[in-house]
Length: 530
Ligand SMILES: *[C@@H]1O[C@H](CO)[C@@H](O)[C@H](O)[C@H]1NC(C)=O
Ligand SMILES: *[C@@H]1O[C@H](CO)[C@@H](O)[C@H](O)[C@H]1NC(C)=O
Ligand SMILES: *[C@@H]1O[C@H](CO)[C@@H](O)[C@H](O)[C@H]1NC(C)=O
Ligand SMILES: *[C@@H]1O[C@H](CO)[C@@H](O)[C@H](O)[C@H]1NC(C)=O
Image (cartoon, rainbow, N blue to C red; front, side, top):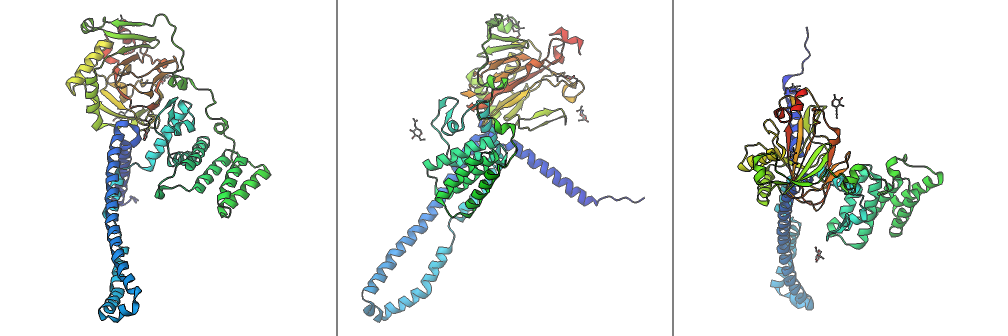
């Protein structure tokens, strides 16, 4: 029998390459610059280094410039003197010798001096630092995040560009470079409607502010991309207008002239250049908001259920009799309560401090692969801490037991999370609903979720339950707790929830997923299932 095996070395080489690729993906996933505010702090330090480096470069340039200018002065002095009385000057052998020598040698040295590149170490330094700088993928993620904020909250692009966020004016604004990057990348993502708004803003901003020379945008280029976007949206007449405006600046530009005739043909023949997509037909901001969007925007009606009210809860444990917690019943299906002032400032700072160095891009369990994976629907960074990590984690767990009455044995580790630019977590359930999976075999499903808010979030970042029309806005030190499973252990689909995109703020949360197995004697009805 003939075996047709590949040479072992080749197989090993390929395996190594695959592993390396996986490793690179992993590292990049963790790096993922925009997904946590805490993680972006190091970019500012990096930028400070880059500015210092550019300043070093300027010093080098100045040194050379100084040398050149000083020499010009003395050279000109000698030359002027000679030319005012040429014959007398040249008849002196010292002068004529010196002239010949200068012309033969010095000017060649000047040429070499001029050719000598300046600031090579500084150029190399940038190259070195580039390894730690955001990649194209980071920029694409940032674009997606900003587009998500715009969509979820129904904001106008012109408002965002001028720092008017959800009705509040901030003293920041975009340059044409920012808006153009938004436009270009949204165009590449075939989100033409949003791209058009950003490109239009770029043209407006280019009229207003002057960009520094090496970064300067070509107005022509922006106009071309804008016209192209309008064509994708079947706004052919508008595209023609844009090209005509561009032609007033550059009447002989061959690309513009060709584009003009192409659009004129389209208009004459009534050709649609793109199929009319449903998405492109919607006018931005006019479509009715979904339940999720309404929740994020704080537009759910206030609860009128008389059974829901605030009280001090001192029944679950002896500790609470001494130190009752301010409890607010939020809903009964699922059972959901909010506790106020559970964490002190000191505790919050300690939690943030221990999490910051280890923050990694958050993952989501994928039933299809049976593994946790990085996904676009969850953008934040997390760090996990075992119960016994520190006196604080032990105290926190004791407090969770006080609040919920649950035994935390076999529950998941504390998860600390920080959201970044437009950070969110799409609608999801916390339960696994998988009877025989590795995720639930040991300790059962996630019977309850306890979510601590470590920070206020200036704008956005609510926890929204679209099915039951509840939205919880983060308040520093408060905790929301709800049951994911019904009394008989069956998953409760009313618990569908999402973390709305953060508009402004650094949202920190800490959560604990409590598993059902240990609660056998605490919620006896679960016996049926286990
Ligand atoms: C806005 O920011 C600019 C520069 O960043 C500053 O000069 C100006 O004083 C600020 N205006 C207000 C109202 O804070
Ligand atoms: C206190 O909280 C526990 C757990 O959430 C709950 O079972 C209990 O009914 C609450 N007590 C009162 C008086 O609301
Ligand atoms: C849970 O799993 C069962 C069996 O696979 C399925 O019938 C049910 O729809 C699932 N429930 C939810 C809420 O996903
Ligand atoms: C559980 O884990 C084992 C070993 O890690 C794996 O072989 C098995 O496929 C997993 N089962 C499920 C349901 O994911």
